[in-house]
Amino acid sequence: MIKKTFQKLLQKTGKHYQIDSRIPDRLLIEMLINRFMMRFRGVVFLQKKVFIGRGCSIKNKRNIQFGKNCTIEKGTRIDGYAVHKILLGNGCKIGAYSLVTCTSHLSKYGNGLKMGDHTAIGDFAHFGASGGIEIGSNVIMGSYVSFHSENHVFSDNTILIREQGVTSKGIKLGNNIWVGAKATFLDGTVVGNNCVVAAGAVVNGIFPDNVVIGGVPAKILKTIE
Image (cartoon, one colour):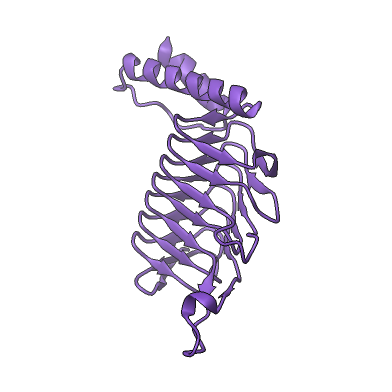
């Protein structure tokens, strides 16, 4: 009975996988209680039907658009101070203890973050979104993935690097991408649709659709046919 109920709830949120028959009912009940409490926090603190974990900090909420059934796991901090609205799509998830920072310095008002529908990132993610980050739909990412959408200028050795300012091109990921744990995306990176980014890759550059990317620095390892 519990499994059937849980399966129906999954289908309503756009998830169509089958629950493993070995999963005990007790685990499912615990998960349902936890989700109920997260939904309660979302309604109370944001007046929105989203799921919010314990200990989250969300600043400038008016500039954040939460999609239906969006999940923000415990301990996550989101800085909503940005030129553009932060858009979190339907069914998307940001893992526990993650950080979204849009305006990191008073010298520049940040651009912000966009995440498409059913895109999820694991725990301890870092979104340095000052230069802008755009992630498509159905992107799955492991833990400790980081985005750095700015570069420091260092061309003049008579001036301290911290006083030379920054450049920003932004970072863009397409749809249907799998990103392994601890991958790092640097400013100016563009990754096409239907790609795989290997764990630990340092990605800097423009990559086409349908490729596997890996290494430091990352390069195309194979084409997905």
